[in-house]
Length: 372
Image (cartoon, rainbow, N blue to C red; front, top):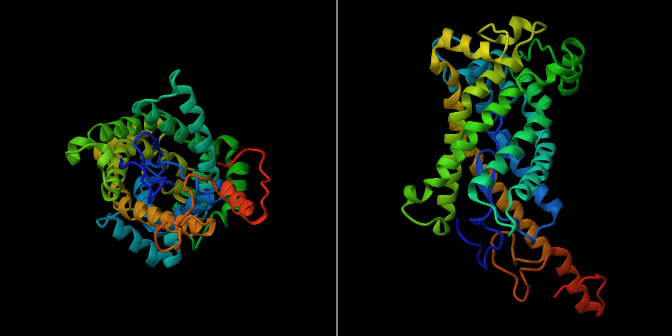
């Protein structure tokens, strides 16, 4: 990955491989991203930039996520089973607003998911470090996969609610909203029902990690050059490729999880699930029996179609928001470019830069630590 330059401190770096578990579909920040933390942004600014980027990318690709989930659960039937047919069918039956069913809870899930993932990732990185503070790429991938798995488990009930909201008919809803869905599932089916299918998250982490490592180890062969010379466009292609490979490998586990999430005797047609099963293993068996082995990958096309727009919107939005924050903090001359402000030390943190400016105005420093 390209080394950080003077023009863009905080650009992707080779030593910071963070595996972002996509969870259902792409989730938030899916697949594999390599970003060095930019010290010129505060923690709240980074969270805000990432949150806006995640919300916008999720909202833009929500119709494809809906088509993916409906195909996985088995709600989509008939000859036209592609993502366009699924979306058009929902549009005609329930109206255009139905294409964004479940997107609100998916966006609300972003912030707790990200907070837990980041905290867990830092813990795992420390655990996998050697005595000199170094970590191998395989260990970094494992740390990221485990962090993604932990955050997915912690926020799993929100993912189940998203599936329930997607499979229901908006004209005859079983749940009137997010909170009503939580309380209804809890009262009718019990607390453990909110974690139905969570074991598939653990099993799906194995092929996800293997896929991440497979892509990373072959990047130099793919581009016929060293990783530290990759351009931004190559890095974007790497992320999309990693997302496509990891999701393809782990998709059967996600399919079974979706069916387990949707299945409920309290919903019309048992949640619309196309096979009857008694558990995760039986669900695998019934899918293969009814649809063949390829039935485990129903909905994969819609899922892969959203990879490029998802990451394109996410990183484009993040970079634009980042430029606004850098301009506000005084590091660049305009939010429309990365042209650095003359005379400003780009290695200073925002608080240090503010104190330094205040010092030149008043001649006093409030910080106990030296800024230079």
